[in-house]
Picture 1: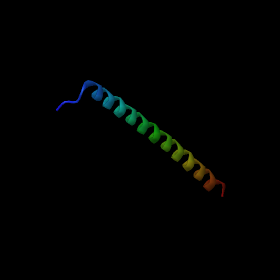
Picture 2: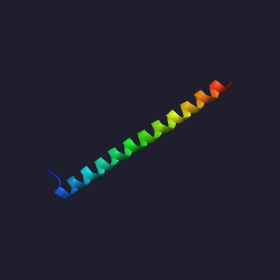
Picture 3: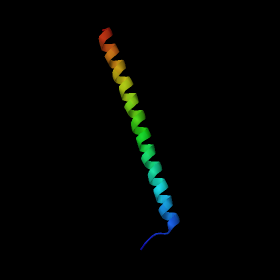
Picture 4: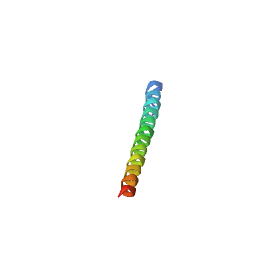
Length: 47
């Protein structure tokens, strides 16, 4: 059974929003991890 057009459009919009949010969270987490690794390297060099 096919869903109505409105439900299909809502699904596409929600899927796109979830995908964009996931990429955003991944990018922020990656950026934080790189900053932490840089700080750890700086601390190790200062010892």
